[in-house]
Length: 296
Image (tube, rainbow, N blue to C red; front, side, top):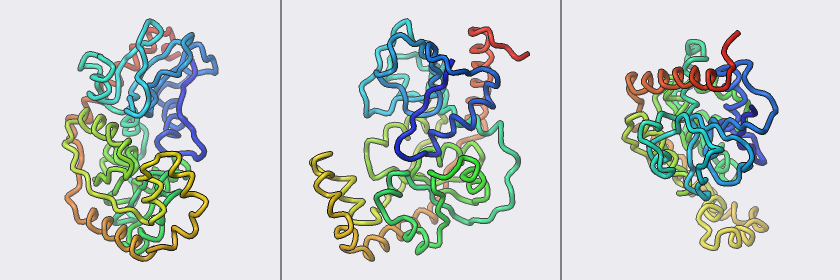
């Protein structure tokens, strides 16, 4: 059984958690045999997985921006990220557990000494498009780059007293590690579905803050009315566009971070988190029995 996860042009913390966490959760379980695909962390429920492969669904979700998969006999669903994924796929409500990344709670040492009062983890695409390093510096907020190694990101998160998260797995992992967090829904509305999916699984009433674009180019890339065509027209002129109102956009973005830092942070209840962890523990044993791969 091979675990599948998304990897784009840049490595991203949420996706790379699969390589960090799955061998810990399921040691001596995976190989490179693609006749069985394990679908774990990420919005990776879509319709282009190989029809001939057995798809094992375990803590992943539907993102809302791809066609829905047609669940047939080649799909085996143990659990999914949240109630919105379950509803979209026509699954029983009890299949909604949490994002599998919450299992990081089982595999991290106690928090090191806090070094950062407030940290901000943007979505990796925002870092490519915007001026978030400069905006975070102006707001006196530590920036956590989700393109760094998983271990580096985890250390930075645990060393923070508060996490402002535009990257969804910044909030998911902060919550699992019991670090208070503030949600900043991504500028791109296509990402909003999955945020609510995870939060509702843990009985969290999401209270997101508004994130201001950190540059005109970031705004143009994100909100291009013409979609890909519009972006193709914008990109050749990036340097010029970025200079327009650069200081104004940076200051507005910094203010949005300062406002978020003063917001009452969120955290799921211990009961809700432990309910999800216990269910995953139980389903892991069931998975091992089903595939005859018990611990030696």
